[in-house]
Image 1 (spheres, rainbow, N blue to C red):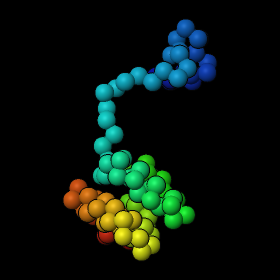
Image 2: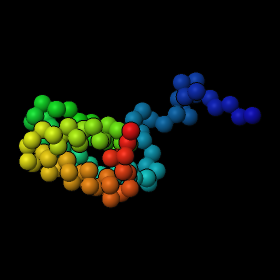
Image 3: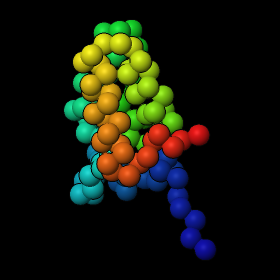
Length: 100
């Protein structure tokens, strides 16, 4: 059985430089574009509301709650962005409206 050596016990010559992150060629694929999520974050901040854009990519319940809050605020631009994002989630098969 192979037991990995904890990084702090390895000699410095065997460790990668601090802060070095190898490029694995992977992309972050989310249900919504980060540009749209950042726009929503800015608009919500104007109304004293918070939003964690990256959490919107993986937490469907949080996404539904934040989009509902944004839509219920009454600001036409905020409602439009929230509706566009909700529709994007639905098109990509996330079905966040079905979260219980």
